Image 1 (tube, rainbow, N blue to C red):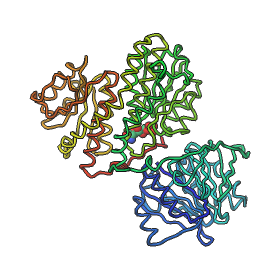
Image 2: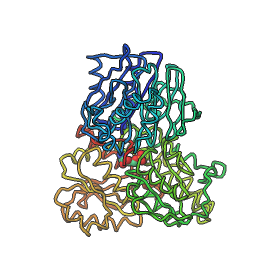
Image 3: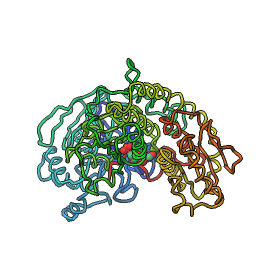
Image 4: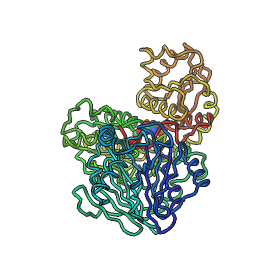
Length: 606
Ligand code: M6R
C-alpha cells in the first residue's frame, strides 16, 4: 500500500527520492508525489498513475533541494488523482502519510470553517491539524505531538515544516516507519527496501514514536515524550535482491529463486549432526500443544490450510485455520493449550496483525512465520520464525508461499517428534527427503516452461476452475488466486469431490479446468470427479506425475507431468506449475504482472 520516504541530505535529493519511490512501487500504488525545500519554499510535484509520469513532470519542471519527502499512494479515501496524491501541503507544512485516519470526517467537521480542504483524502486532516497546532503552539515537536494525539487509526508520517529547514519529522502508529542513516544523511521510509540505496544502518520505530531527523542528527521520542535510543542494525540489501536481473518480471525471478529460498528456509530446521529436522532455538513446549490454530490472509492463508494437513498427519494435533479478516469478529475462544500461528510475508498485514493482537490480549501462546525481519507481526509475537525467501517484490506471492510451506512442514515434524509420534529414524528419512526439495523444485521449474502453450489457449476463456483433493485442494485455491490476480480472468478453486454439490453447473463445453492430481491414495477418486467434468464438456489440464496411470487419450486436453516425489513434498512441487501457468497467461495478456491492477503488496488497512 502507500509508501513514504523522507530524506535530509548533504546533496540534492530529487533523484534519491525518485529512486526510493521506485523501490516502493512493488507495494502497489496509483499516484505519486514529492516535495522538496527549494529557495526557502516547499515545492511539490504530484501526478496520477505510474512513477514515470512523475519523472516526466520533473523533467519538464525540475525541482531540487537538500531535504524532501515523497509518496506512492494506493487510493482509499478519494479516487486516484493529482488532487488526492500526496504530499498534502499548507502554507506552513507538507505531509506524506501511510495508513488510514478513521476519525477524519469528525476532524474535518470540527475544523472545516478554519481550513480549506483541497482533496478528498483522510490524510489531509493531518496537514490541517498540524497547521492549526503550529499556529497555536509555535513549537514544531508540540504541533506534531498534539496532532497525532487527535488521530484515530494508523499512520506513518514524514513531515516538512516551511520554517524548519533541513529537518524532517516522522511519526508512527500502526504503520511501519524505518529510520536510516548513511553517508549522504538521514532518512525515514516505509520499509528497508525504500532506504536500500542510501542507508547503511537502520532502526525500527515503535508505535507512538516521533523522530526528528536532519542531515547528521536523529532524535527519537517515545509516546511519553521521553528521548529514547532505538537499536540500529547494519543493513544491506544487495542490488540483486531489488532488481529483476536477467528476468522480465520480479514474479518470474521470484519463481526461479525458489530452489534457493526453500533451501535457505529449510536449513534453519536441519540438525546436520543427527540428520534430523529440529530447531532447539524455538522455545515452544510442543508436548503441551494440544491444538494448532493457523491464521493469515490470501496466499499465506492457503499455506495454513496445507499446514492443517501437516499437523494432523505428522503430529496428530487437531488444527484449525482462519482468515485473519474474519477471526476476531466471531469472538474466538482462546485456549491455553493451543498454539496460535500467524503467517505473513510482509509481517504488516493489518488483519493478521489485529488477529495477533487479539490473541496477545488474551494471553495466548503465539508463533509467527514472517518473511520481513523486524516487521510489526514479528515484533508482536512471542515466538518468531523467519522464512528466508528474501525480498518478495511481485505482488503475487510465490517464493514466500513455498518458504511458508517448508517451514510449516518442518514445524509439524518437530511437533510430532517432540510428542514421540515420529521416531528418530522416521525423522531422518523425512529430513533426507526434504533436503532434495531444492533440486526437485528446479526440475519442476524446467518442466513448467512447457505450460506456455497451454497458457496461450486460456486467453479468452470465460473462467478457469482449479480442482484438487487433500492438500491439492488448498493448492487449487492458491492456483485460482494466483491466476485471477494477475490475469484478471475469473478463476475458482474447489475440492474436486464437491463439484457435484453445485459447481458442476458451471461446466460447459470448452471451460478450462486445471486438475491437480498427484499419484497416491486420492488419485482414483479425483479421476472419477474429473470424468464427471469431462462428461459435461470441461477441458482438462491435468497436473500429475511421471508414474500416474492416466494416459493422454482419455479425453484429457493436456497432461503435464512433474517428477515423482515423496508425498510430503507434493505441495511444494505442485505449486510451481500453477505459478508458471498464471505467470505465462498474464504475460500473454500483456498485463502488469508485478503490480496487478487494484492490488497492493502489503495490505496495511483492514
Ligand atoms: O504479507 P502477507 O503474506 O500477510 O499478505 C497476505 C496477502 O495479502 C497476500 O498473500 C496476497 O493474497 C497475495 N497478493 C497473493 O498472491
